[in-house]
Image (cartoon, rainbow, N blue to C red; front, side, top):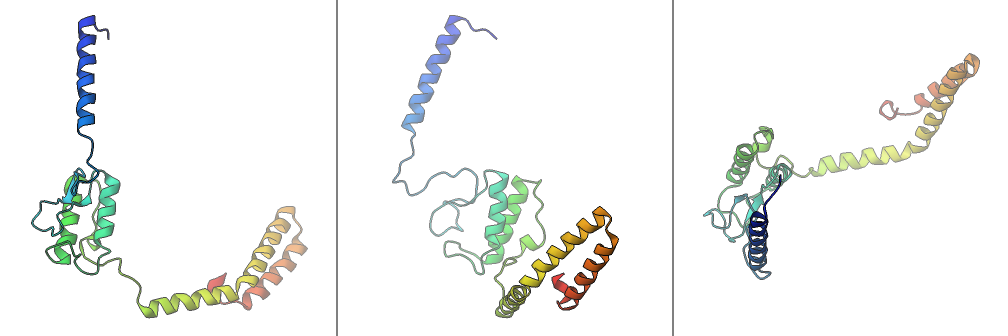
Length: 180
């Protein structure tokens, strides 16, 4: 594609004007509200108390993040006028509208699906971790023996493989089933 001199001059002038406008439109660092592109709850929304934009969804990653963040609330946030259920369902509907390729599950439409673990769940996880720590040495021994068994089988030393398998069986009998 070739341009004549007049077209090139016109393009250069347009570009200079574009640059001047871009410099004039620099963001004011003291601005209270900035345009964040597409947002689910814009500052002007009657549902927003603090007059700030919330939940930007300019791309698919931000949309997924908005779904996840909306479900992390256990009650309606301070800035929102409405129930937690209405916040979560509005976010889910907006994500589905703007990004139909993102599947929004039924769980994502219900608030609090990512709630924190209860005390009994935490105690259970802690006791499992303690058990795992107690069985750490036998587990590394088991891994070593299994590696030796693999080598013996690969080299064809069946007698050595049988002896190692007996050691493995003995070690496994001393450990809880879920650790091997």
